[in-house]
Figure 1 (spheres, each protein chain N blue to C red):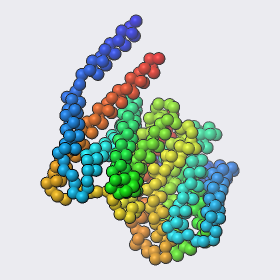
Figure 2 (figure 1 turned 135 degrees about the vertical axis):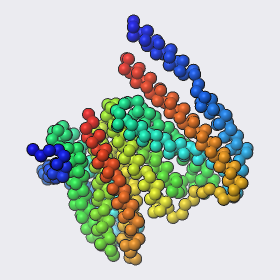
Figure 3 (figure 1 turned 90 degrees about the horizontal axis):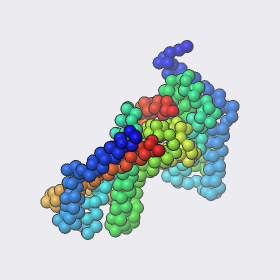
Figure 4 (figure 1 turned 180 degrees about the vertical axis):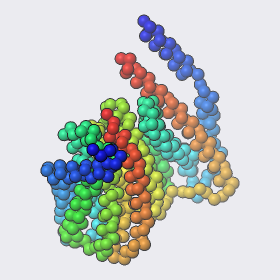
Length: 235
Length: 229
């Protein structure tokens, strides 16, 4: 009896928390709408590059979030190893999941752009190669997680692996541009100051919007995971 | 009995000696490494039919053969402990760092034997001319550490998981890619006729810094893998 009452109270509390929206979540609506509108309507086309430029305002933030998610995942991996709380592992894994999703989206949008500008979906450009490797690392991480049934062991091993890979990824970003590719195709910032300022503003807003989206998704994913764990322990 | 802290180096040597003794008894890792590389080399040799490939192609063959041979044999050091149920005894009797260093040295020794064999057969069977043997030897020595280190770490992780065979390759690849790119580029230089040490300096700098960074992080993190469960 006592158990069912306290469970009901927990559910009610969770529901109340789910309904309440934090201010930063409300901010996401104008931010995302603004980024989309500004990206398509207000931002200038970059000289020489045609209508395909518009993809940049979504491709760049996706790549940024893909990298950020890795850093967050590594941060929670360290935290897990230090404190041994499964909640940290849940966050680490959730961030890695989102990282994989966003790197995948960045790769697809980049490849579409590359097809129309460079003539092929895939060119082994340094940035393409780096992101490809980041995806492989994420893939290996999830394969490791699925191969370890015990939650504590899974958390430890995947945290260690995430941190080992955190050594490899920056080295690759250093090595690939110098030794692998003959010439980098990926566009660098435009020189024209007036054009640059507008592009910078839209990109900044879009980066912010995607970052807020990422934080929100991370929170949802972690909460879902903890509910699943609680359900398992009740059953 | 020596205290644990004084025993790091001694412990590592003891683990290495144990590994070598066990390996010489069964020769599982050594034979799988050697057979794999000889098979691959002969396939390449048949296909090329006496025509020596250019430097870039031979460099990538060399490291592809060494990579796949390593992936076929270097996980034995840890997987064997779990299979035979001796991991617990080792965990109780040795310091984690001593285990890590001992196993790393053992894998380096295995890879060294493999490298000597592959390098000799490579020049003999494929007819590859090596204009600068000194450069290739230094690359193989540095490459030995750069390949053994990530594979030893992933072997330790994999031995605590299920489905070890496929997992070992998948986990090792992202960690092996930076050194392998550098080693293949360096070997292309070393196998070319107009090689100079100056061209190899950036390759060595990155190789040594990567291996050093991974060694420090690995030495620190190994305890977590080893003590878990």
